[in-house]
View 1 (cartoon, rainbow, N blue to C red):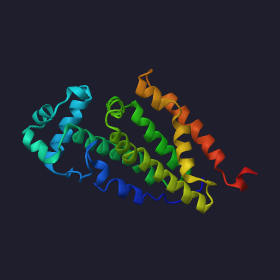
View 2: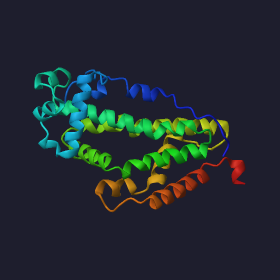
View 3: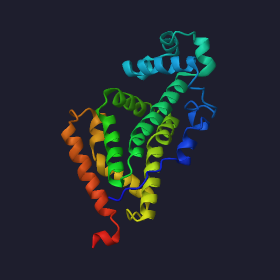
View 4: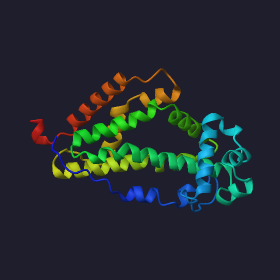
Length: 236
């Protein structure tokens, strides 16, 4: 593959991380997110994250979160109006960190194929992490009760990642490295090809994920994707 700088600056990422309406507690009116650099807010989020990994969602109370954070319940309510607001902030933060970690190392590669390979490897690494899977299961379980949570999850993580990949594919296509008529669709197809059923089986806890299976799945999916996106002259 031709080597070219990989651009990562995207307005989509800035929009998702802006700290406005999408961070509101499920079922509540949109409001600004608390400053996540505030020491008290960090105490709450870190304590809550540990509790939500250890206990079922319904077993975690604002009393327990405040106690684990070493603050009063009154102080907690200064920053978060409810348990749902705490969990929503955790979902947003987790998704933003995940999307960034998946993308960050790939941004250092100037090769189209290698950048896509790194994105795929980073994405698949999530499904070998027990804590990440446990947190995602908790999110999924709460979406029927708090539909807004599903939107926060999607817009803070999967959507950001797919938009960045789509932008990368659009630019690669414009340079002639790839031929991608619909970058948004191609980004979604890429993620499906390099992961197939691994996300689902991981969430369902169906067997241990081995490095061999991950490597084979990624390389097979990447080869299929690149073969379908080769410029017309290379196909001949």
